[in-house]
Image 1 (cartoon, rainbow, N blue to C red):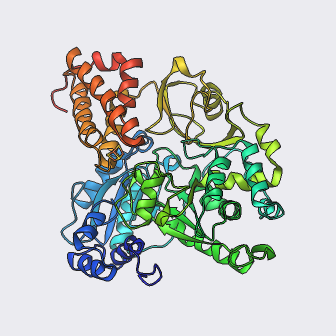
Image 2: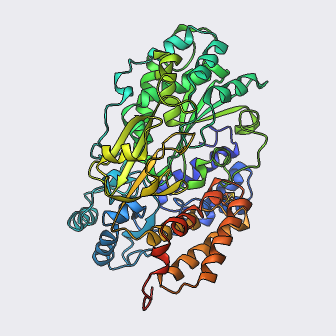
Image 3: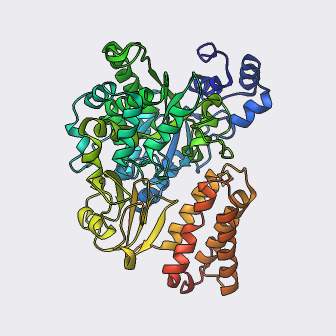
Length: 551
Ligand code: SF4
């Protein structure tokens, strides 16, 4: 494996994953050995291994259970499942059974909000859990009916409305792209108006143009498949049902900018999808859709590989993702330089989200004009939304940008909502008085996560859940984010206990604003939003709380 990566440090995370797959954890001896192999100090190997949630540096159980604690799971009964697990196994969260069979822990969102509550057992997904089902799963593990390293999972189908992707003919966009010059192709993507579907909304064609203009013989296309924003599962649908569109989009991007290598950075929680993607890639190589002279285009050589993440929300940020790919802790870089100029291994790199790349395939087939005719002035085209929570028809919805929150709620059966979280935990918590707002960059730009909260939900508990997530996921690089979020979480727990004074609340609001302005990346800049929103729109839920005996 080290040889495959030219003994470069970027082999570090794949090697650590392979060791862990074999031995269930990465020992100090293994860290020393890998460090010697790659010329990396053992202390740095340790620093990487302890950064990612999915690496164990101590022995764990044969079956590692990770129960998702995103809000959709909590609303659908994750705490009942947690009690069942504790009672059945006779251990608490964070512990391993004395016989070394099971380790029990919580994890962040695993992209199963539609099928919540859900958990991972090693790399296998179990969704729509009930206490009875949990008992059966544990029995099957005990009886040896489940292996330690299952490779794939069967996940029930997720509801989607009619997706444009379904009508796409294989590689129709790529064939049309190859008939153009790279600059004509980039102009077509610019004319479509498509902006990155990951949340930041940077114009995709402009990103490609900058990478194409960067002087270098080596360039990279990276697909960001680190779908970690809680409540988001639309990329999982593309990866499992429309992966060819994604690979087609990556190939189009490579032709546009002059790249020969593409990498899909797949989140650790989606390990069970890896085999499927690799099988599709093998098929594409056989059909000359990848490799040398793609579709007979002399001089156009391109291939794609899958790189597994190791569990870190912050790696959804493109520079943190590149750090991770290079075998480092996933800590965001200072910008500039931007990745289009100096990205992976210092070379011009395009990082695009799964949905962006799949959509580009459709744009090239149907034309920029068609795409630009959908949506609003500054938000062109259609968009996928993952909807979960208190609604009768959750699922993945394709809608034009510009749809209002009210229209979306009518569609998904969430008319009785008290609040809606748009854009995941880092997005906006909206009260009913703002449901006339538009899902569009002019108003509510977002990556696609929508969580509906019904009248019965305690929004201060929601704030606690979000802040637990941000405390867990902060990379620790900057103090306001690392320490400030801990203070906010403590403050919210005080508020939950009914022990609130106006002075205390004002201090928390002031701290929130400091964290927002002084944090380096989107995580710290967004983490206080939920408390600010609860304070602004749902202050009664803070001030009118009964004093709890203990919390
Ligand atoms: Fe890391 Fe938080 Fe700073 Fe982002 S804001 S770089 S996650 S410490």
